Image (tube, rainbow, N blue to C red; front, side):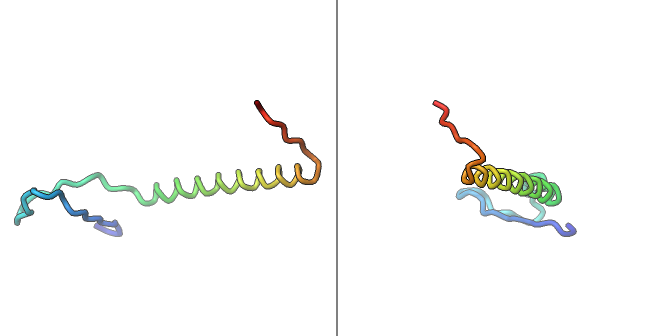
Length: 71
C-alpha cells in the first residue's frame, strides 16, 4: 500500500459479517498530492483576496477611496 491512508468505516446493521476470502467493496483512492495542491491554491487565493481587502480598507479609512451603497 505504500504511504496510503486507509479509512475503515462500520457497515450498516443487518449485513452479513465478512468471512475469509470475501471481497470488500472499496472506493477509488484519493490522491493526497492532488488534495494538497488544491488546498495550497485555495490558501494562496485566500491570502491574495485578504491582502487586497486590507489595502482597500486602509485606503477608504485614510480618505483615499469612496464606498457607495448599491441599491
